[in-house]
Amino acid sequence: MTIKDIVKEALGKYLNQSDKVTTDILIQTNPNGEVIVWDDDNQLARDFVEYSADIPEEEFFNRMEQEIRAVLGELDKEISFDNLSIWQPFSFVLVDQDKESVAELMLIDHDTQLASHAIMEGLDQDLDNFLKHLLE
Image (tube, rainbow, N blue to C red; front, side):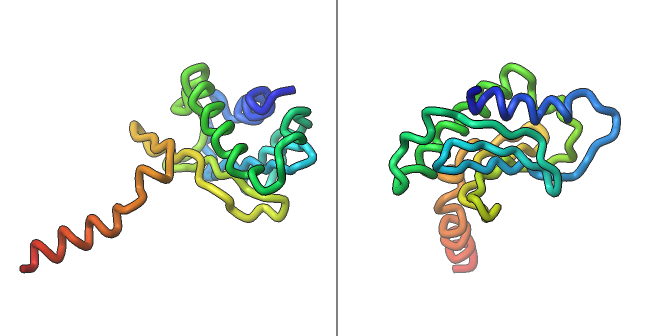
């Protein structure tokens, strides 16, 4: 099974439902190849991905972050995250074995999708500089 298949299976539980739920989608990956998708409290899908077990431990989360971002981009084109019965804004978050956040993969907020934390990097500094310039 692929990461895309696992995430797609999990998201299928939120397609075209009338009741919206408030949650983020957590994607837990382990160096042994296990991928688990959670909402706030419930396991939505779980399986193993063979090739992820070959990734060196020190590179594991960086490689998984890149791969899962690409998968989410593909899935949004296939099923459109706007069709999910989840209140917006919500996030897809990569988590470790302890369900501690490793990276925010994608933020869905109505028509806005931020696919990278790098987009937001430096925003605080830019706003501080703007405010300082405005007050001068």
